[in-house]
Image 1 (cartoon, rainbow, N blue to C red):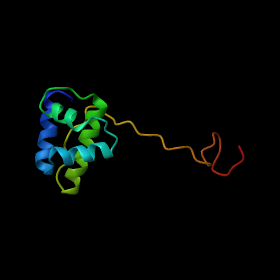
Image 2 (cartoon, rainbow, N blue to C red):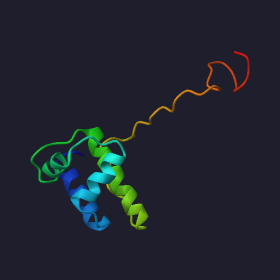
Image 3 (tube, helix red, strand yellow):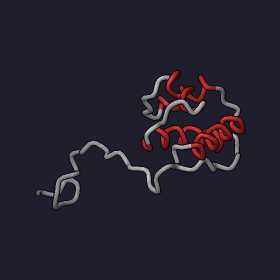
Amino acid sequence: MTGDQGRAAISDGCRRGQLDLQELWFRYISLGGDATPLELEAYLLGLMPLDDHQYDILALALNERLAELDLARDVPYGRDRLPCRRRPAGPGDQPGGAPGAPG
């Protein structure tokens, strides 16, 4: 979804979400995106690609904005499933037992 179709979906999401490039970029980096504002602008102009992971972060930023405005969250993701980050292991995360159980 990172080609022309992805760019069109991102541009449409920005228009509907009333986000300019700077606002989109702030939302994108707050979710872990690592493209610079210039790279993001170049992507939107079709001058450079974004990898699937970075595109999905951008789509997530837009879908969150659309949800804030009670609009359809329909900016598609490039991958079927977004990877989840593993939370840090806590004291109850010992293999083979319940929290607090000897293990």
